[in-house]
Amino acid sequence: MLISDELWMTEAILEANKAARIGEVPIGAVVVYNDWIIGRGHNLRETTFDPLAHAEMIAMREASIFNQAWRLSGCTLYVTLEPCPMCAGALIQSRVDRVVYGARDPKAGCVHSLIPILNEQRFNHRVQVTEGILHEQCSALLTHFFKQLRANKKKNHIQGV
Amino acid sequence: MLISDELWMTEAILEANKAARIGEVPIGAVVVYNDWIIGRGHNLRETTFDPLAHAEMIAMREASIFNQAWRLSGCTLYVTLEPCPMCAGALIQSRVDRVVYGARDPKAGCVHSLIPILNEQRFNHRVQVTEGILHEQCSALLTHFFKQLRANKKKNHIQGV
Image 1 (tube, each protein chain N blue to C red):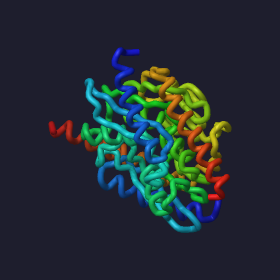
Image 2: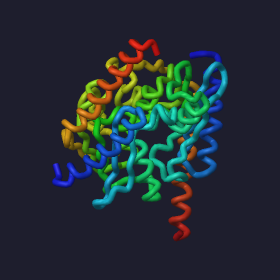
Image 3: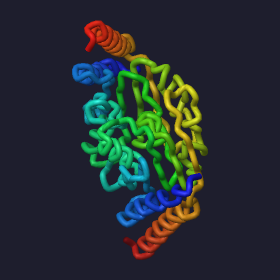
Image 4: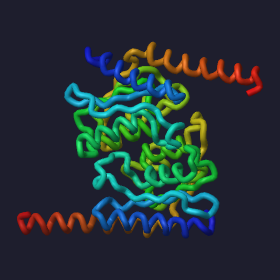
């Protein structure tokens, strides 16, 4: 863990909050290069109808456009939730140096939880991993969101909406 | 294998040829729903500086926009090369019913070659797989492209370019 990891994760949490405010599952990400954020993103799957619009993917695409290069060498991606198989694969494709995530995702996480994709030695790129940075805040975001969602559903059901 | 698999793979090959013509690694894909192509894509990584611009991703995004829904239920994705971990993960995320691919990718393929991502029973979606459709044409596309690339490099080296 680097001292600055918590700082950058706070920025990822800010992104996650943007998703929550528009009814999207609150997951946020930033891409950092030389102590600058060059890509930010929050989950936009429902809003854009795009199954690929995960926070990490949006942040990585923004960083690549900024860099005018598809290789994100020297970059670290901070994300509030453990990446899914698509996003773990995208970290390899984009040659990100390091990924830092907050909470584990036991249902779809593919860094530690289900398939340790980034441990596969035969890929042509290695990604360093740090987990658990601000994990309580990152977990709480999701717990609160789904609790609220259930409460709203219950309320609508009672009101017959 | 369905009788129409070869027909749709021919369309994916047409897409791959578009990539080759602009100097991109020739990989192409189409998304088919009810005997209609609703998404097409070819590799655009170098042209767009986007590490996520694989043929499959572009075709799936186009199909989602067409459907106005992130779920591609009932769809089949045809792609000339075995999907990488990112694209295999994207097939799960987008709830594609079936994937059909041409040639195996021993360096990065994540359907059969390196990690059988689509076999993971704990994901919340299953994708059916068919491989080997028009695999000779699909393989030949790549072999020819890389042979040509090496020849051009050699020529430029001799000419001192």
